Amino acid sequence: MDKLLLIDDEADVQYSFRRIFDSPGVELTTASSGEEALRLLPKLKPDLILSDVRMGGMNGLETLRRIRQLDAKVPVILMTAYGTTATAIEAMKLGAYDYVLKPFDAPKLKQLVAAGLNAARAMRQVVSYQPLLESEDYDLGIVGRSEPMQNVFKLIGQLATSDATALITGESGTGKELVARAIYSHSGRADRPFLAVNCAALPENLLESELFGHEKGAFTGAHAQRIGRFEQCHGGTLFLDEIGDMTLATQAKVLRVLQSGTFERVGGNQPITADVRLIAATNKALEDAVARRVFREDLFYRLNVVRIHLPQLRERRADIPLLVDYFLKKHSQRVKQTPRKLVPDVLKALNAHAWPGNVRELENVIQRALVMCKGDTLTLADLPAELTQPGRAAAATAVPAGEGGAAPADLAGVARTLFTWARANAQLKVLPAVERELIIAALRETGGNQVQAARLLGITRATLRKRVEKFGIKQALNIE
Figure: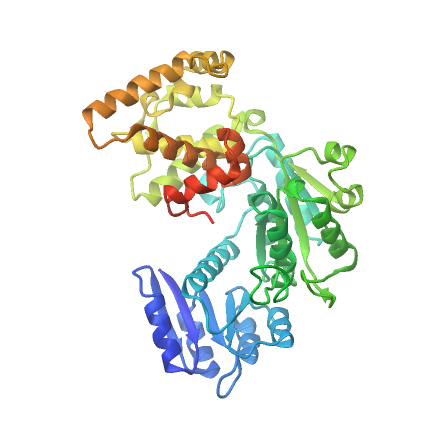
């Protein structure tokens, strides 16, 4: 249950919010003044607060200041019908999550609240960087007793005591964001915001606006001033994932922030100061990108103060049993099932697999196995064919279909199975069903990165976006 606290002295605003957030998963509490809200705060412990700026008694900015003294992490969204640049800047300096103008668009407000709730959950999660004996002691899944992971844990511990910029490298699915959150959780900025931005998921113009904000009228569609992530994260930690996909123009602006701590919003000319600890991650070889002149050498050296390289899962096979145990417990609890057991042959198959998708792929396999399992013990029958019949999977990979040629034998077998299901179920529409599942699988495989998922599927990103919208996949995967 997500608990929201609305602070507004207007009865019609309170009524509107009750209608907008009338859902089983949300509990809305209202307060008519800042003073009343501060009395409610210790007992209520809201997940997110929305507050008007102009109210009788204590105004919204002073209320925010007092809230920060009681709870430094709860996201606070300020609202006003009398927005000024000075008020917006002061709000963000005091630690507001965001700042919106009245009247507001209900769907956009709900999206903003959802993002704020996600940020609240992330900031309240604690990551342990010391290797523990029992996997259930790991809060965010950084699990491992192998030597490569021991080295990662040591680096996290050393980084946590400083504000040094860090660069996390490793293949997709190795857990780079989890490591970034671990550094944050044990740093001196743990009581300040942590925000993550996937640089590969946004076009250049949107990424620049996301990071630095924009002024009203800066470009088509900029109907109001927007506060960027650097401003929102003042005093905290900003995680830039897939920074290797950032354009040279945006790289130059990030470099300036690292060098001087200042930047301007898109369409603005007033320097803004931000005290932000930056952690970046990439699955690309940035040295090669520098050599090809698609990544700035000066930015690379600014980011590469301390580097943490995450090993591939096939380089730390000793951790597979511990990870399997962790994922069994994690996903059994989510579906309210008794934790499953597994036969020894299952662990052998898991140990033998190449794991191109790393830990993320292993987690997906365990999730699938829990769905397929009929009893309380996982068997080989619950695993996907590429793990139990590696020879067939390898043959299919080694003999790909030529353009316009015949499909590999494995795919022909899959087609026959699908048609068997279709004959038994008149409601099954084979092509849409397969297309939807392939898109979901590609997005899961790439962590929601639509550029990489489109490349994996062999389609354009625009086509992928249309299919995501058509099949309602955003709701299924909870992606933006």
